[in-house]
Image 1 (cartoon, helix red, strand yellow):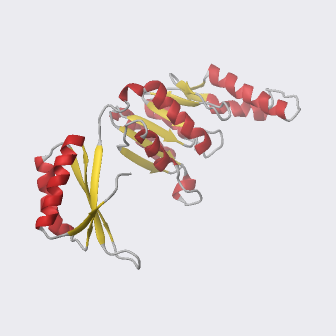
Image 2 (cartoon, one colour):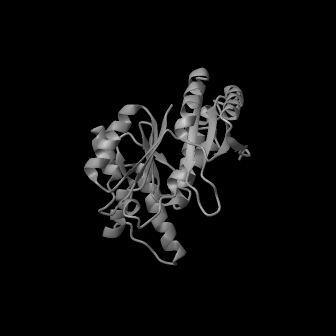
Image 3 (spheres, one colour):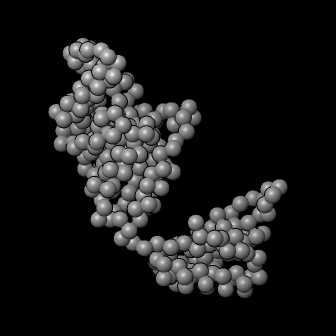
Length: 264
């Protein structure tokens, strides 16, 4: 099954905040023998969020979404998910209980009493309004949950909350997918190489070994590093070994200067 992530927020696109979710989510997946298939960044634009979610809901993919599930005017994700599915949005009873529990905990920590019916506390309940049919994603940081519907998992934009919630979703719902497909990767650094010269060999390797992919990552010269290409193969471990040996033999034929990259 394909796995995707949607990262929502004007603050990411404007550069006010640097996205940390993508690299961390890749790490979380890699630790479980999974890999990310696609990622999208979207600003706080209702029409664009709705269109993106309509497409991803129709895909059948496993999709994580970060950001926009708060209760301020620039938070649109909960409403957009409901509109994308053409369902109502409603206060989830368990989410209401958890939000009110958080309000009371915060008041108790400050040594204060609390009235749950004040306008600001009633407004906080909007964070528990989810598309009808949603299930909750527990939030170990402050109890205010995310929500899940149709293999889509909506979590806050705060990494301290989002990352353990992502891990919980994977470990709870998708452990049967962990480490199902063995993967390997081997690569070399080829100095002063030209990609157009290497391309025929790369195409031949992918044709001969259908369970691998060849990758080429060129780098320009710097004061401390010569111009080079990271050239490698990844995929099925058995085919990777054979394809890598053939790739090195091809580089030898081309009289290329190269050195192996140590496994990470």
